[in-house]
Length: 245
Ligand code: CAA
Image (cartoon, rainbow, N blue to C red; front, side, top):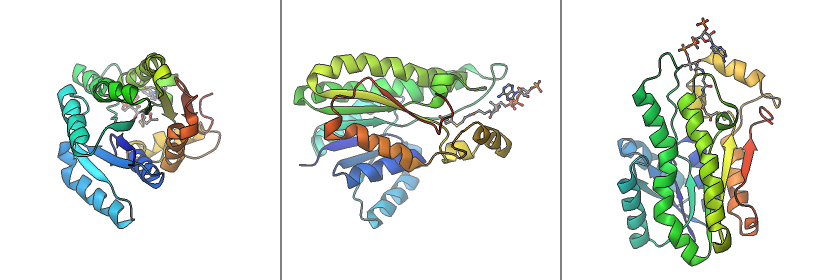
């Protein structure tokens, strides 16, 4: 039987590439999406199926604990136990301290950090009981170095490191690895929605001289979920073109 992997925020640029990679590597992938993106998610699913990549799609609100545990219960009863969790869902809502509202703060913290707990809690014990599991949390270069106008996003992404390292200790003797990946600026909708002048100024800070590609993040996921990566836990892989070392 194929191992089951959940990828949250799957319909986005990085999530899509992660799904493709995991399917090609023999996992049965459940891609999650926000309920308001139902039509987009179904179109996305059809496109993948046309590429020859079979994938399940299911809605979840990662900021809500009950929604996450309901999703996992549904997967366990319909398909089987979850072996791999890629916590990829995330949003930005950038604003300087002068302008940011409490709602912008809490919304980003709930979606980008509470979500990691909400999705992990319902799968972790089963992974331990089964003696094998892989959890990968997608953080960000901006959780490492901070970014002008991103107190909410940077705080959430930095919080992921503490979560990852603490849970890695709990999973270490159970065959469950917990790692993070910190992408730099990748050429996805999230980055391309910024004003062009800001994108240009960021690219000037990247020694490799370009934005990253989603496949370059998916390739790190492939590496960390591999059977022979069982000695890597509590680590972070920074993939940022040399922008932050
Ligand atoms: N450092 C210092 N000062 C800066 C600055 C910087 N990087 N950027 C702008 N300022 C200054 C401006 O010159 C301006 O100064 P004055 O008030 O003296 O004129 C002041 O700060 C206000 O700046 P803005 O006009 O930019 O303020 P704004 O409210 O219009 O915009 C912002 C704020 C929306 C946060 C905008 O600066 C912005 O979009 N910044 C980029 C944030 C960013 O990198 N987001 C990443 C999104 S992608 C992502 O997050 C994925 C990932 O993981 C990497």
